[in-house]
Length: 543
Image 1 (spheres, rainbow, N blue to C red):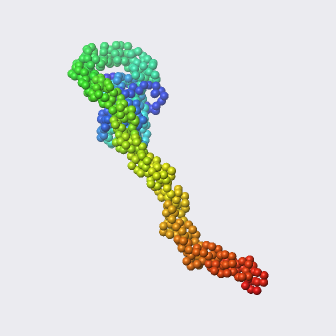
Image 2 (cartoon, helix red, strand yellow):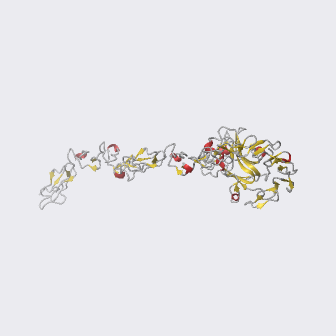
Image 3 (cartoon, one colour):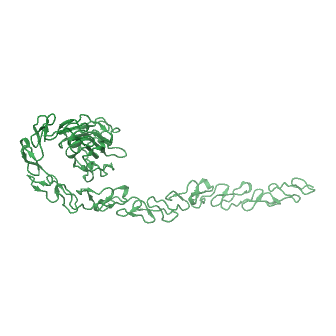
């Protein structure tokens, strides 16, 4: 079908969002969209791109459109419903933490057309310079044209491709917003200034670039033949207004149809009608142009408006929007999507109808819907883990992390009390130092005992008591500390740890100080405090 797309500017500029851009209306919001192929259409359909949602930029997050794999071309478009005056197009592509989707974005084009064929329109942007590191996401493209369809296109048809490009053509679009004036004949940021009479004018400058339907001539002052789109310079009919056909578009099309502009037969029926002459209303369960669309998941099956597809009585469990063709999202399920999902594993959405979690539960909950907190003594995903038996308070741990509430029993450490004391410590909170265990082995983590015996010079179960002064440097018994071969000079007792009593000295205190001595050295027997009157010598044994 011939068409006229009025070129408003021959240049394109990729811009960041500005306050001026926000003054225009998003003409694409909730308008019909189409995708050349769809991967798993129930959550990556074309309409996701114009639903106003792009908080989740994962391509499988339920807010993006994805084309099928292994294609050489990929195309998406939105129907604005009528010719509009466009200012700019906003594109938001899918992304992730590794930014791998730029390879599919590179090389894309944007067209504005009055038909569904991009070749009938004008290209307002084509990427020839970006790399994976430099391509912006999101991107705003100025497209000051008049048109009905905005078309996003990419291809991989002429290898080899530039570095960083994918080998196949994919679309992973999350949002497209088309900003401009909703009504022809006006321009300016608020679309409030009228264009020159009968003109299609530049959206920011107001200069006359073409004529409104029905007019032609340099100043758009001449009337086209009634009911036709005419050549803007010569006035010859190029296309008919909807509902008309024939020479000079003077004949009525059959009711409820788009007809051939020269002969009149119906090419397509208007929404809600079907049949050769579009006289039959849609059968129960169908809607749209030619009645080719099935009703969505309506509350009463097959009960929807034949023209719009809107469900008369609401949606079945798990579905939402007026056509009931979108599953519950945003962590909801059930009737009117009013019930909240439990804590499904890894944040996965629950089943949109019954709320069950298909891949199990996150830590701290269990049950089909993952909405029941773990009972005492259990924690973790699906409550499958037992609290540590080493928690100070039996079966008392955090249901999510397993951290022991009240700390650990003696000999255990870390938040879940599953690690023995280390660094040669033992006991409560691992604060007690081990003794000198044999071969520098660690002591028992609970009671501190040395299981393989003691190093030289210490004794006891914990090897933390020093030996006494055993005879000739012999080792004491490592269990009870006794000296098998007696004591060194100056001490006595089983453990050779008691100093000699006054009046005794030598090994095991077996010697008696001299009778004339006022007090002898407990090691050598020398009278350190002197002799009684009349006696002399080191031991006071000389008169």
